[in-house]
Image 1 (cartoon, rainbow, N blue to C red):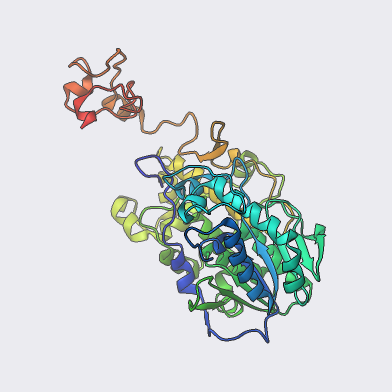
Image 2: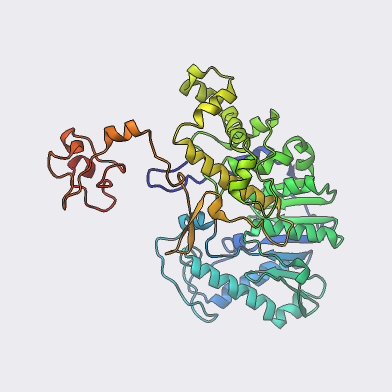
Length: 460
């Protein structure tokens, strides 16, 4: 679940899930059938023309031109990500950060920096999103030209979206939301479009999480509208969410939980467990209903004590996914004795890390399942596998809970040295050095984490 650097193993092939489940819709003109479009604004930033040596204002004009083309056919709901402190998306976003971390103060008349500099630095990206939202809401020429026939609803950093229609700008208090992810807000806007009487909705996004959310909520809401998911990139295939939901109705209600548990932006992926295996396991009828189902005010410790089967059921699900590999690893436990295998595995210290990951999956699934609510579930991430980093004002994943030893005590005694001098491990008095072994994180020198360990084996 973690790399040797300590970084969370983020799922890199989420799109496999969408590719294997989607029912492709013909790439045709849907203007007669669809009257509303929900746009992932953050993804648009990567596809709007980014011309060198042009100003920020030129980019804004390109962005508005794209919106204007959509509004010839649809009411448009434009949704951006929020960037909150102590976010569970901190790890994923830091992994996308550009190596050049210079922060710019963006103004409309300045030459826009390179795309990698703006979108690869969180502060720059936040500035650009604020600038876009402000310009869309204040450009009266744009309003007169574009909003006469169709309306534009913009959801930015503010909890209350702004609607522009026939030059009138209003606050949409009925669409107020404090959710952070554009993926979740997209579902809210889609549902609102249905309430407003739209019988055909286009969701423009490439994100697998959005696909899973659409399929789940389409089934849960018992919708019958026409709903397609299209890419920002021209000529890519479109997904018919209505037909996909009907074809996979047997697994739709468990899809969110399975996707979260097997790896997403906030939950570690497991080495050797891909989305293809997850789909096969879901279709075999494996239950996973508990994950993501909880009362909003329920705290983690109480919930996990009151639902003792949550971790074992998650464990059994993943064991079913990787049954052949586990037979090789734990053949003496005699597959298919899954409950017995669960019981043994839960006592291995590394499995404490798995429990923390189940908590993170549970939190993410809860947030997704409550996408239609104004607020996300009132659950403290620090109770669900995260810890606060006050320096960066972000959340870091817990590898194992505090007080849990990383290996059995006998093993720790075998590999640990207690060198604590000014130059630890430099002499043969260091048991690791004497045995010609590198020091580890269990040693008093803490390996070379503090650049103090002088053991040549460690340095090499």
